[in-house]
Image (tube, rainbow, N blue to C red; front, top):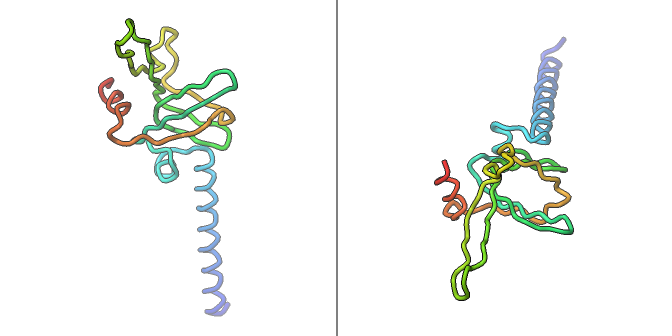
Length: 139
């Protein structure tokens, strides 16, 4: 085998290895993988989001960290919501509080799987958001 053939074979082998690694990376990302792939493609654990959902009858917003995001669903870690209580007397301000779903009386697990068919929008929260401050105070 000539020197040129060895170089061509080496280049083909390197390209094949790169193609396999790229395909593996794509599969990890599509499955909502964690680690470096998840962080590069939008499932970073240090970002908080508002996920607004509507099912035709009700609509509500959940806050939390997206840990998995596929074509069909997303998983929200430590989901929370804003609760607004009407003012007790006319002229008083309504009472606004932030609650985490895991603190409800039925004690759900600290994550929620949301069917993307019901997602109206997803909004990343700014680092100085009062919701992020509420999460920090709950720890």
